[in-house]
Length: 261
Image (tube, rainbow, N blue to C red):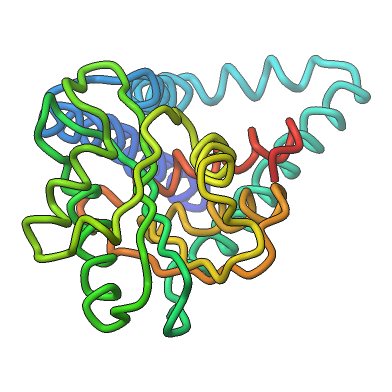
């Protein structure tokens, strides 16, 4: 009797912890969306995923009872899918994190700075950090030129390349060292269009992007036959890093499925 009561109390505690996790998960993405001033598709999905987690926790006994009635082959299939997802998530995230801290070689021919969100005509914090990272490198390596790559997306009044050029010039980088690519809308297009304009594949290249994005950026460049590339990641904001790590997992899987990396 005592053992049964203790078991039920333990089960209740686990449910409470699980519900709190679901609430905090959803609240985190709500707060991020408020801070960004927009709720994009990914954040909305994550908010509802947290709510869905709460519903599952509340009805966990009913779900297990229902699951127990399924044919054995369906149970096995479901377990394989779940384990495959968890394994792929851990592996991909480890690879992403491993590539977040690297140091680029000196005296590259070009730095390629990958574009990022511009709010109207104001560069986002990730974009500012990318350009500032490039500025530091360019100030040390005076013979290195810079390609700024990024088109104009929804909510952007100017191209990402134009926003980056303005920051570079304001930080004392000579305009003769700055080369623009202003039509790309994705990581793959960044490299495709930049090479089409400036023949970069055989040059010594340093790629600047945000740390969580570095693995996909390098992998995409290699897929497009860039031969001599190094990475120079800019630091991401710790407060939103979990969002970007989750997003990047989905992006890496998408790129891998469609053979973009």
